[in-house]
Image (cartoon, rainbow, N blue to C red; front, side, top):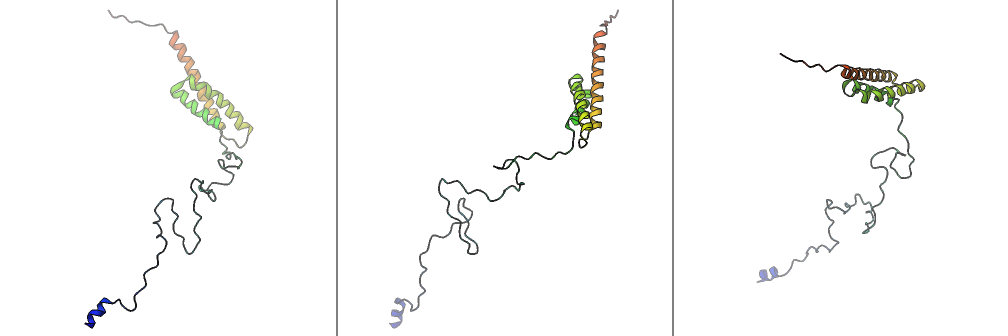
Length: 164
C-alpha cells in the first residue's frame, strides 16, 4: 500500500510554474507595430492616435541639399548644358518643312534659325551655329518651293482632253 500512497502525493521538488508576464510581443509583420528592440536598445515612444508621424530624418530620396521641393530651400536653376535650343528647333522645323509642312514649319524655321545663329555668335558657350544655318536654309528652301508650287498650281490652265 505504501506504493499506492506515493502515487497520490506530488513529487518533493516540483518545478515552479512560469510567472504570469505581459502579453507576448506581436509578430513584426503587423502594420503599426514597431519591431522588438535589438540588443537592449530602448523602444521608440508609442504613437498617439491622431498625431502626425514624426518628420523623416534626412532626405529619403537622396537628393542634394537646396533642391527644389524642399521647404525653405532656395530654388537653384539647372546648370546650362551649352545647347542652343533655338538652333535645334530651327533644324527640326526645317527638316519638317521640307518633308511635310511647307510654309507652316518653314517660316518658324527661318525665324528660329536667325535667332539661334545670333545667340551662337554672341555667347561663346552656346553652340549650334551650324544647326541654325541649316534650319534657315531648309526653312528658306521650303518657303521657296511652296511659293513656286502655288504659282504653278494656279497659273496652269485646266487642260481638258477629249477623245474622239
